Amino acid sequence: MRILVGALCASLWLLYAGQVLSLVNWGWAVRLGLQDLGDPNDLTHRLDLWTARFDVLWLWTLPTAGVLMLIDHSWWPYAAMIGGGAYIDGLGRYMFTILGLREQGVWTGTPRDWLATRVIFLPVMVLGGVAIAMGLAEVT
Image 1: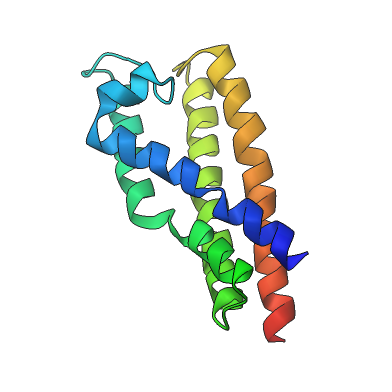
Image 2 (image 1 turned 180 degrees about the vertical axis):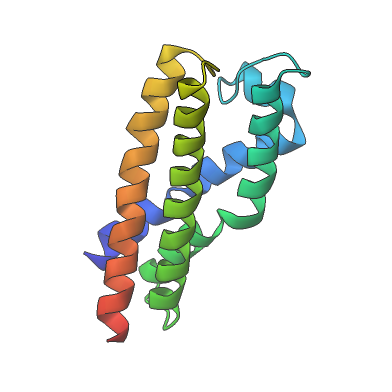
């Protein structure tokens, strides 16, 4: 189980790389379909840019935990708890921000983007919860 969860967590480096690209070169991220073109003066566009900045600072934690799981490093349980918490918090906060904006009549992205967000974010949040549970089980 540790190897499977570790591999899934380590694969999140792709998600992290997408956020780094969004931060470094928004135009490339748009061309690759990772971000919407958006109007640079639009509130939701600016929110996405700030989200990318935050993600680059914090969302390396769960992929790192995955690598530590794969090599069975003694720190993997702690990294898994920190990384899992970071992903649950970060992705959950983003999803609820979008829901709050929609409730106020501010629509972000396309329906396809919202579907992709749910298809990606919810399973990754569950993965974060599994990583936390595994880390807790290992240290107790």
